Amino acid sequence: MLAVMDAPPPLPGEVLDRLTSALYDELRRLAHARLHGERAAHTLQTTALVHEAYLRLAASEVAPVDRVHFLALAAGTMRRVLIDHARGRGRDKRGAGAVHVALEDAPEAPSALGPPAVDVLDIDRALEDLARLDARKARLLELHVFGGLTYGEMAEASAISEATVHRELRLGRAWLRRALAGTSAGPLPE
Image 1 (cartoon, one colour):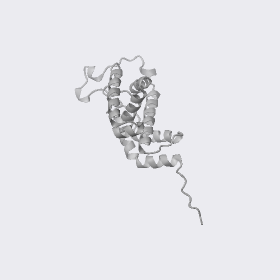
Image 2 (cartoon, rainbow, N blue to C red):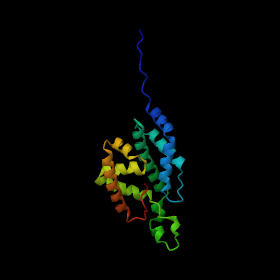
Image 3 (cartoon, one colour):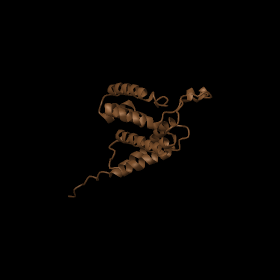
Image 4 (tube, helix red, strand yellow):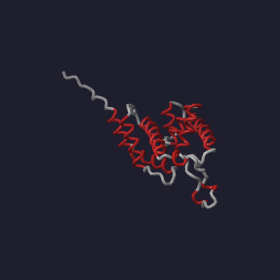
């Protein structure tokens, strides 16, 4: 009698490829939403952000186990891509002495343009500060702002209830708004 062997589990790269393929449209939607909050002259495009995040995930040793875990990994990776891109444009070297004026404070600013975009580096610094005080709130904000995860998905990824996610996000957003109040940042991306 022949022993029937189970198929070997898929390799981490195969899992990543399958999840990326199945969730590509959702990843593009998340990347587009995240880039929508960036400055108008941002040079990173939606597809490039998704592809760079994929390349970084493929090069890592971490293998996603399911959809929510994959989206959580993608959120963190997209955040790092955006941070690296912002740092690469040399903002601090070329504009360190510049005076930042909020769009609504500029005399010629038409009100139709709305508030200025939030600078991803300001959000990153604020999230790092928050992580030193409360790592869970910082992680939930990262999953929500950079990953676009729903409350249910964040609850599953963090092994907490949706009510706790709601409470933690509410407090985390308030802390983040206060932290960003001294910068040239506009409203937080929802």
